[in-house]
Length: 279
Image 1: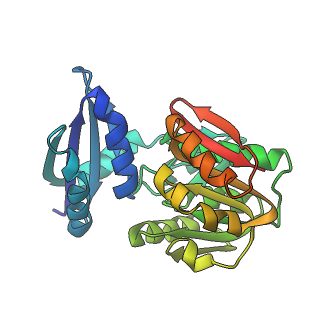
Image 2: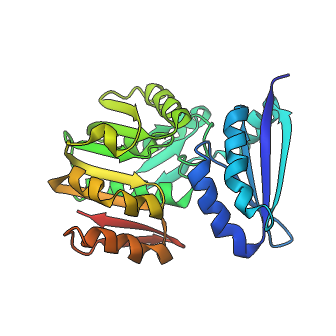
């Protein structure tokens, strides 16, 4: 029977945010989180790509002395069954993110169908849900509109791009991870989406272009490093949405963008996570 690699990370409360940040950086395939009776949190990653999992283990090495990390193999059939329980519909604004076997359960919401290969980008992670809700609100307020062009930097599963396309926008999604690009392409086809180009890379693959909406749901450090590029990519009257950062990191990110001439952004919080909006 085909096997999947599983990595379990058991982290005490003071390490949860650190491990979440590390997984967001190194695990484009996503992860599950479970609160344990001990008060610790278990993070669980599944993937069949051994090279990818080797890279993830390497990325986690700096924390090996502070958390428990275990690598095992399981039958792929068991993992697929587990996903059917875990991957439930998530409502984000007027969107709902659904697995293929629940695609008829959208109700009045606009359905985004995502194959259960990536937890990061299904709406279960707070920053994904936060970004989708922000996009939903900007559309309903008329601050971005049908026919406009968007950039989704660090697209992951492509879920934010799919939401924009379902609203009649068109644009480009990029990711530095080939596995994420392939997953986003699969989800684009699954949703019968046209007008979405998916590219491997970062801001360099769209340099010199301008967009009505730029969305980057990545991490605080790359948001700061890419500030000059992202401001240049935003059209003169375009909107910019940044997330993937904790509320405690927001001031540092805001400083990088206001230093380039942008005004103070609107801040939207979901628990400890923050989205910054210039629109």
